[in-house]
Image (tube, rainbow, N blue to C red; front, side, top):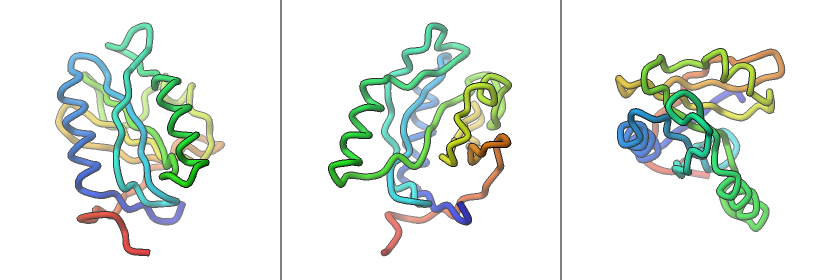
Length: 137
């Protein structure tokens, strides 16, 4: 993925989700089109220990895939927060990543968000361009 753009609205929603979920991890889906995160959809964290891990609600993930196949927004990637950690992949994140080229946005308690692409050889940091709204075609 050569370039990533993210709307300010999506970033604000991620920061709010992370703050409101404290002390648990928040999670959700980054929706848009290839290389463009137009919006964030918060999902339930169904992990057995949501204070230390995240698991996106499978029903929400399936619904997003169905919507994408029906012409809706694509799943560009995933979001979660680290309530007591840094805005970068943890050892658990590295072990669970699929290496599928999707974006991972990770929020720290400071409100910082780290952006990464999950590649076959691990995570690669990326720096998104922040835009006011959905990118123009």
